[in-house]
Image (cartoon, rainbow, N blue to C red; front, side):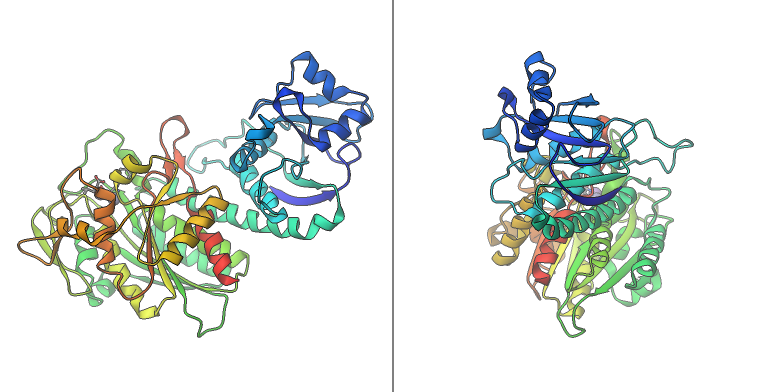
Length: 495
Ligand code: BES
Ligand code: MN
Ligand code: ZN
């Protein structure tokens, strides 16, 4: 799907389909008014007939409207004008792309008069591109036939009333398309099953990404990980026949000496729980336990495509958490790369065991900040559901900037606490710390507290994406989150 801008009034625009907005109560947007005037009342007639309600997410496709240059007019319901907001905007774009009709190769959307408070021209364009691409995404590479039941337009144009708006809009579309490419990569990797997307496969994908975008890359095997002293990370992977990988990707968009931002992504390619094995219901969804890693790859892809002026390093510890004769057992004590020892009271709390060593490894880059991204706790899903990612930070500016980026990108994150008093739960009688606290007691916070003990050398934030990285049920699949949040945050830091 390609994105362009087109300048002209809705009635005169030459395109396959022109989409204009209609609010409930028959209130028309400026573009809908133009179409209505040019056609001597076709839009108002559609409203009057009851065929157009203006309800959010609804569309009506009209053909051969007199006085209109485009052969199709798509009326898009925007809901109540007073309630229209950023989320309604994205929803309306998705509805327009779905409703354009299978004959439409180019869809022009007159979306800039769908008024969202405090958003600039680049936002309209960026959000449009991301929303449109969401409709186009398919997950059919492992099906014997392609899913082509619903065709989408090959080109989507943002229709602009004035040429002056073109620059910001084009930049926004390019940004949106790059972010969508990053999200698609994250979704694709997330959706791949554990027998395909192994630690080795993730390493190969990193090399491929590095080749395509001229990134630095290093994929370390078990021996190298052992040499680094990552006893905690290694202990998790040991239960599996699939060997672990430590993946490092480097994007250099700023001066060599500029301190890099480091993204650490949890790369558990399947989480059975290990000896503390999970119940079998929905266990298939634990193939998504590498969505943090996928988000790191996706974000680096987006930044590289945009040639962002910033240095970013991605670190992905990748392994599989399975039970076997070599797996961690409850009560086992391992030594992390930091020297701190950990009593593993529950082998299903494995994410923190691989991330802690990656966080220690990050120190060598003298980072400006480190953000880790992990499908870390079921407790985070209990706390925040599927709307907000959990956000934890040792640095208020970092937390504020991440939260703001998430809000702008419709990829929200909500800050949760890290008070010292929670740390007491991690006390162990036999090691420096336990890997879990009291079951049923602030589990998402305790996991973050555990990680914070390994992230003292730099400003640090942690995103728990257990509830936001994928959808369950009929729409089961990876979401590509939080690629939009991370990319926007880093683009802002790039200045
Ligand atoms: N990958 C899971 C977290 C998870 C569970 C994400 C369900 C999404 C849905 C993680 O490794 C895990 O198993 N965490 C445990 C921690 C507990 C043993 C302290 C959990 O949340 O139950
Ligand atoms: Mn687990
Ligand atoms: Zn896990």
